[in-house]
Length: 427
Image 1 (cartoon, rainbow, N blue to C red):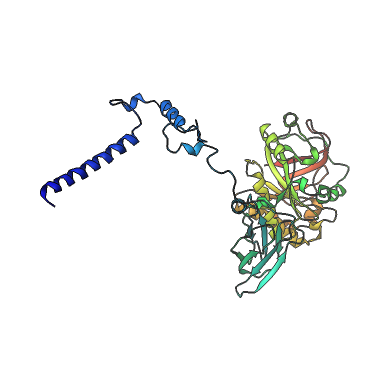
Image 2: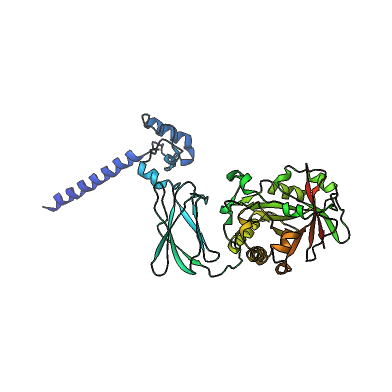
């Protein structure tokens, strides 16, 4: 090829390149006149021009300015329907977890849903494997979501929940150490064991009785309110049995303090139950300017259950600043489970309750009538705690230590319908 041909070829190639560049520029131009600045093109103009260019588009009129992510706000852009597999993967309602605790040579396993609530009505099974790979299966026979295994040798165990239709169980086992001896330490997450009176049969479970105190009374029983003095205060104790209370009228009647029932353990099933008037009574009494303490009616049959009761009461009282102690109410229950234990066990229950409170920085005590303190409890082992004596006569015959005296169950005070217990707190 001669030099002239080479020159024409080069010029032709350059011309082709320039033509292509010009075509690209014309195709990508937004039609602005030469010299027109971006400031002269409003967002509305851009939206309108694009809408006109795409009149048949399902996004007509829905684009947001020149935002390339505007489609993210368009509800019609994405397909709202998910596959069944996707929905199942995202559904966590059937996920289960277990919470395992040990107080003394035992295991308590709670089966919980995604919200931390007990799962009831299902016959769950758990497997407990020791260090020698020996496995024992325990069943939730009453389907209450709680499986209790007693008399287990101390040591480390792996606890797993067997598969059950309709639920997803944990893939891995839970390691727990079974304790040799109770440690009197509050139980974490005890709230899942606390029931309301709507969940149980209160007529069968709430059976505490003052019969022994009433039989021990005499005709000198004082039924009128004894006013406070230099070394004592006048008070009452209440529960759901008193119903709605006008606490301002109670205070104006000369009452200075109140001991409120937090709850009780069921005398048949052993369920821990919250008194339905507990919160209303505590908050109402404190708002009226009264000092407040609480009591819990026990049906514990061993120290482990006493630790549960103390833990439950502290959980119930957590929202409040109490000025007075937390008492364990120990009395007859018309043949309930707590009536079946011996004197030494019952005394150990009282000590375990108070020691658990003490280890948590709380002040604890025991309520009992004179007969029970003399015959069913070793009162000499309670001297370090607050003793609340029930004895219905003009002056107590009980010669042991006590810091509060319940002198009648037949009192009357403005603001409360019916009878109420009168108490004297010594200080």
